[in-house]
Image (cartoon, rainbow, N blue to C red; front, side, top):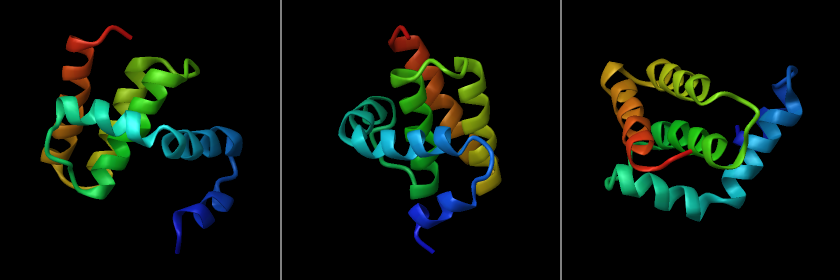
Length: 102
């Protein structure tokens, strides 16, 4: 099933999820550039999605606190992969916080 069709299954905060999806798509080039500054090798797609969605929230939205964004991205990476993948996602955000003021 295509991801755009999965959004219909979201019942809580549908507008927020739609904003995340559309925001990442609209700003993909900028987000990909930022991600590449901290992780030059592109991770697997499911991990890249965790990183890009989190970066979108950190850079373009102010609805969710930064610590919650990072926590959710790391938890999602852990659900989708393994402990090392969660560590990778956490490291990307740790580098971002060290190098860029939010």
